[in-house]
Length: 237
Ligand SMILES: [Zn+2]
Image (cartoon, rainbow, N blue to C red; front, side, top):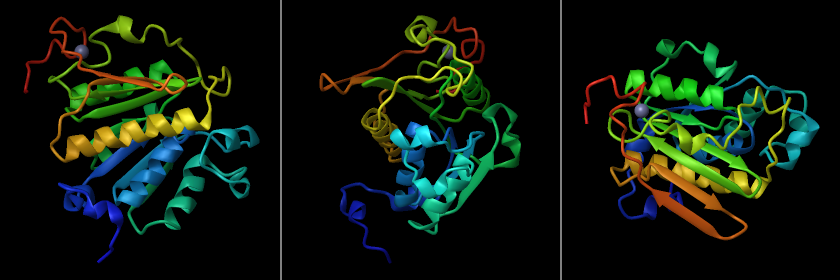
């Protein structure tokens, strides 16, 4: 029996975590930190990313020099294996090419660098009914969205909310300014929302933060019944 200190937290439900499998899309600045947190918490993780680790990634991602030249997912696997025996599946692929039906997945986590992949996972969430927790960063600011399909707002319910994020083909072609501390903050909010959901606590559908100004704003976005994506499916909530 492990005596991890998080087990001392009131209402902590390790059995729930032990029985949860998370799909994590993206193993970059946010995703690498989220994957390591999930390993420490004993959550089974399937991580999907197509990138190979490059020198510039060491500035804001949870890797070491010894991982240079490895795929990010294989590098993460080697890190996680030193932390935990929890199951960790590494898939080097674009998320759009993953055959979701081949895996048992309870919750989708997104740590992606482009809006197209976010919309794709949002659609997967809406059609599968699985929760989707998306984290994004730019500079010292970021946001985390928790989408409970047909219960609160999906990513397409209110398109104007994310219009400020430009469509970027990929991070390597059009890099987003980011710093490790912002990524850590987004990752922490993302994992906290996962814990809230799994432990039956209230989740915030949209958290924005500005690390430089020391501000975090949680708000709840209602579902738009006219939404092109989730509005056409009867509510199950
Ligand atoms: Zn919607």
